[in-house]
Image (cartoon, rainbow, N blue to C red; front, side):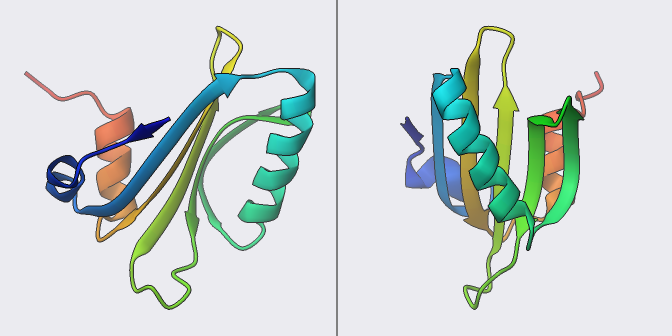
Amino acid sequence: MVVLSDDVIKSYHLDFYKSITLPYDKKRSNEIQQSLETDKKLAKKIKEVISNGIIYSGYYQLPMEGKLKNRYILFKISDNATATLIYMEGDIESEEIVNLLFIKPTK
Protein backbone atom coordinates (compact mmCIF):
# COMPACT_ATOMS: atom_id res chain seq x y z
CA MET A 1 0.00 0.00 0.00
CA VAL A 2 1.17 3.50 -0.79
CA VAL A 3 0.12 6.56 1.19
CA LEU A 4 1.72 9.79 0.00
CA SER A 5 2.92 12.53 2.33
CA ASP A 6 0.99 15.77 2.66
CA ASP A 7 3.69 17.71 0.79
CA VAL A 8 3.49 15.41 -2.23
CA ILE A 9 -0.28 15.20 -2.45
CA LYS A 10 -0.73 18.95 -1.96
CA SER A 11 1.57 19.60 -4.93
CA TYR A 12 -0.97 17.71 -7.07
CA HIS A 13 -3.99 19.52 -5.53
CA LEU A 14 -5.02 16.36 -3.66
CA ASP A 15 -6.22 15.98 -0.10
CA PHE A 16 -6.19 12.19 0.04
CA TYR A 17 -4.39 9.44 -1.89
CA LYS A 18 -4.17 5.71 -1.25
CA SER A 19 -2.99 2.99 -3.54
CA ILE A 20 -2.72 -0.76 -3.20
CA THR A 21 -1.14 -3.34 -5.48
CA LEU A 22 -1.86 -7.02 -4.93
CA PRO A 23 -1.68 -10.35 -6.73
CA TYR A 24 -4.60 -10.71 -9.09
CA ASP A 25 -5.99 -14.22 -8.74
CA LYS A 26 -9.43 -15.70 -9.48
CA LYS A 27 -10.82 -15.11 -5.97
CA ARG A 28 -9.72 -11.47 -5.91
CA SER A 29 -10.83 -11.01 -9.49
CA ASN A 30 -14.49 -11.64 -8.66
CA GLU A 31 -14.39 -9.38 -5.59
CA ILE A 32 -12.64 -6.54 -7.39
CA GLN A 33 -14.81 -6.74 -10.51
CA GLN A 34 -18.01 -6.70 -8.42
CA SER A 35 -16.76 -3.72 -6.40
CA LEU A 36 -15.83 -1.80 -9.57
CA GLU A 37 -19.24 -2.53 -11.10
CA THR A 38 -20.95 -1.20 -7.95
CA ASP A 39 -18.77 1.93 -7.75
CA LYS A 40 -19.09 2.81 -11.41
CA LYS A 41 -22.91 2.76 -11.38
CA LEU A 42 -22.90 6.28 -9.93
CA ALA A 43 -19.55 7.34 -11.38
CA LYS A 44 -18.64 9.17 -14.53
CA LYS A 45 -16.53 6.87 -16.71
CA ILE A 46 -13.53 8.72 -18.01
CA LYS A 47 -11.56 5.83 -19.46
CA GLU A 48 -12.25 2.10 -19.37
CA VAL A 49 -10.86 -1.01 -21.05
CA ILE A 50 -13.01 -4.15 -20.90
CA SER A 51 -12.21 -7.48 -22.54
CA ASN A 52 -14.37 -10.60 -22.28
CA GLY A 53 -16.47 -8.86 -19.62
CA ILE A 54 -13.47 -8.11 -17.37
CA ILE A 55 -12.42 -4.57 -16.54
CA TYR A 56 -8.68 -4.42 -17.24
CA SER A 57 -8.36 -0.74 -16.54
CA GLY A 58 -10.73 1.94 -15.44
CA TYR A 59 -10.66 5.57 -14.49
CA TYR A 60 -13.83 6.85 -12.81
CA GLN A 61 -14.92 10.09 -11.22
CA LEU A 62 -17.21 9.49 -8.24
CA PRO A 63 -19.93 11.90 -7.06
CA MET A 64 -18.75 14.49 -4.54
CA GLU A 65 -21.19 13.40 -1.80
CA GLY A 66 -21.09 16.71 0.05
CA LYS A 67 -17.30 16.74 0.39
CA LEU A 68 -17.00 19.40 -2.31
CA LYS A 69 -13.91 17.58 -3.51
CA ASN A 70 -13.44 15.60 -6.69
CA ARG A 71 -13.11 11.87 -6.03
CA TYR A 72 -11.52 9.32 -8.35
CA ILE A 73 -10.93 5.59 -8.59
CA LEU A 74 -8.25 4.25 -10.91
CA PHE A 75 -7.78 0.54 -11.54
CA LYS A 76 -5.41 -1.51 -13.69
CA ILE A 77 -4.50 -5.16 -14.13
CA SER A 78 -0.83 -5.38 -15.06
CA ASP A 79 0.88 -7.91 -17.30
CA ASN A 80 2.62 -9.40 -14.25
CA ALA A 81 -0.73 -10.60 -12.76
CA THR A 82 -1.05 -7.80 -10.23
CA ALA A 83 -3.88 -5.33 -9.78
CA THR A 84 -3.44 -1.74 -8.70
CA LEU A 85 -6.30 0.23 -7.18
CA ILE A 86 -5.98 3.94 -6.43
CA TYR A 87 -8.44 6.20 -4.61
CA MET A 88 -7.85 9.94 -4.48
CA GLU A 89 -9.76 13.10 -3.72
CA GLY A 90 -9.02 16.79 -3.96
CA ASP A 91 -9.38 19.89 -6.07
CA ILE A 92 -7.64 18.33 -9.07
CA GLU A 93 -9.75 18.16 -12.22
CA SER A 94 -10.03 15.02 -14.32
CA GLU A 95 -8.26 16.69 -17.26
CA GLU A 96 -5.23 17.31 -15.03
CA ILE A 97 -5.14 13.65 -14.01
CA VAL A 98 -5.42 12.53 -17.63
CA ASN A 99 -2.50 14.81 -18.50
CA LEU A 100 -0.42 13.43 -15.61
CA LEU A 101 -1.19 9.78 -16.33
CA PHE A 102 -1.67 9.43 -20.05
CA ILE A 103 0.04 12.27 -21.88
CA LYS A 104 3.80 12.26 -22.25
CA PRO A 105 5.49 15.62 -21.69
CA THR A 106 7.00 17.23 -24.78
CA LYS A 107 10.67 18.08 -24.78
